[in-house]
Length: 201
Length: 121
Image (tube, rainbow over all chains, first blue to last red; front, side):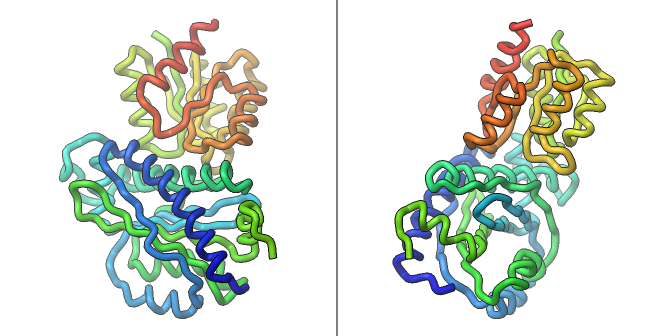
């Protein structure tokens, strides 16, 4: 599937709106400023994308959410392990530093933050663009960044050798956590989003 | 003191809801992780009201709501979910939910939803 620059620009606007909504929901959940910014949206070769990520050997917490509905999509929210302990403290309204290591609470907070992000992204797409999209329960993985990213792409790679990747940078107020949010819409269902905003080819 | 069953697959959400309810004079008598456990705990504990998430593994919150109302047509269930979509709201209300609170929520919103539902007894 070839996506023209015009279509990519439209998708960028759509994704920015849904990410803004998720950003607000996250700030409210953590009761601190959380800002998610769309960094880039682009077509990537499946093999190149996995090779690039495989060189990233940082240990991360990854939350993968599959969506069901007429717009197939996957989401990966990934942050350094120490970042997930800081978010646990914010979520539980306790001083930062209280949670020392990844534990059952950290896993549960990661799961819930994935749920909040995925739900609010899908809420915008559903209300503004006539999609049907419901998140499934999030899966939490602790592993190297490359391995988590590969597991996100694995199923997608079976069907196509190209991906539309939406990359974001994620900053939490008063901390230096850099998190990543990847959205991976299925190419086959992208046309439905574009139809909803008027461009038909 | 009104007795509440809290249903959510995330342990920390159940913990936070329990803290808010306890601070506001409710008694959380039980917790469940999905719709199947919710029905079991409902039968066992007979709570005055239930808070129910929607997206959960095994049996989701909409099915959990239906199952509880099949068992007890007078059950009072308040849905609490980050899903803010017309279809989900419609499914919840048509299947007998008393209210729908969207996450993230202010403490007062959940407390007033439960107070209002329980006042209708």
